[in-house]
Amino acid sequence: MKITAIHSASVPIASGMRNAYIDFSKMTASVVAVVTDARRNGKRIVGYGFNSNGRYAQCGLLAERFIPRVMSADPRSLLNEDGTNLDPHRIWSCMMANEKPGGHGERSVAVGVVDMAVWDAVAKIEGKPLYRLLAGRYNGGAVDDRVFVYAAGGYYYPGKDVGLLQDEMRRYLDMGYTVVKMKIGGESLAADLRRIEAVIQVVGDGSRVAVDANGRFDLKTAIEYAEAIRRYGLFWYEEAGDPLDFALQAKLAAHYDGAMATGENLFSMQDARNLIRYGGMRPDRDWLQFDCALSYGLVEYLRTLAMIEESGWSSRRCIPHGGHQMSLNIAAGLGLGGNESYPDVFQPFGGFADTTPVENGYVHMPDAPGVGFEAKANLYKVMKAIAI
Image (cartoon, rainbow, N blue to C red; front, top):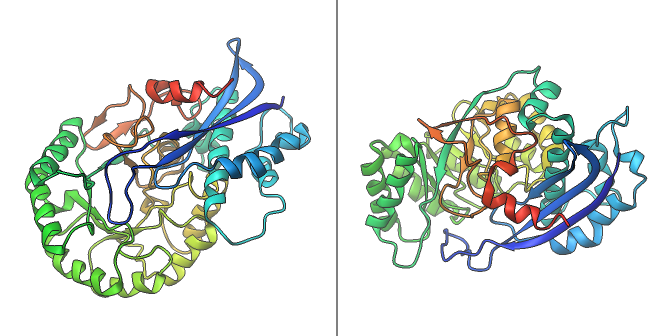
């Protein structure tokens, strides 16, 4: 068994929306296909992967470093002990050969894309959904048959007033979501408070609304928002300041006793550990949002989960960023607290399988092999096109 080819492409996910920090008018994502010579039901097995929104396509890094390293390696060195399947950990080590520690940024995204595709292929070769493979290998076989999901949206658009924001949130409730997330920090505090109150009016209670500043605030502004929104009893207050400003996060905790969330822009176990050590995050109420697709993939995410548990945290406090099927499988197979969802934006990557409806804030896991990309028709069409 061997990998016969790895293909990659840049796919546009451009949109007129913006958060407090960036607009998405030129946003792209990388898509990767890992082609193997293994077959099931007469068809070759191909693993697919892509990177989460918010980080651009990684064409150069994939083409110049990470794909060539895998393709030039002895194929036997990339297999498990008995040679019956690919070994994601060995492939990960191959990709990271001759890479210095530190500098966790864009290269972590490139590695994460290939890693996702490898895990997809591994589970397909075994003929299992990825979440069941993960549960069997790392979680004593325990599977969450349903996973909590929340609807992420509430972006700023040109001409999008409070009424349109409310209409968006009503759509999410109609789809079966019980918790919604919206952006803050892109307008004045007063305007954002009006937006928050308008959304609460739709969903019925502040505990069903999360807000996300996308790292926009300095400490003074973060505290001003904290003091203003405290009365709403929100689901969480997300990424108030720069993701690497652990002192800001720690100081903010003294001014906000509600739940906070952060971590989507920390791209290694080491950065995640620094958040736990120095960020003032509280394991009884706060949420960790590390996204495997942006942070060197599932191989590294397993190290991160081991670290947080050794630090006194439960994996149930993890709700990954990204809104994709890979994290959904991880949540179900490794016992996380839930998963983000993008029902309206970042298509065709946002959302889950076409046959996976949201029911009272939860999705039931499908029985599709691998990550399950083939069960999401619009996404699979994009992926299949690059597997020449």
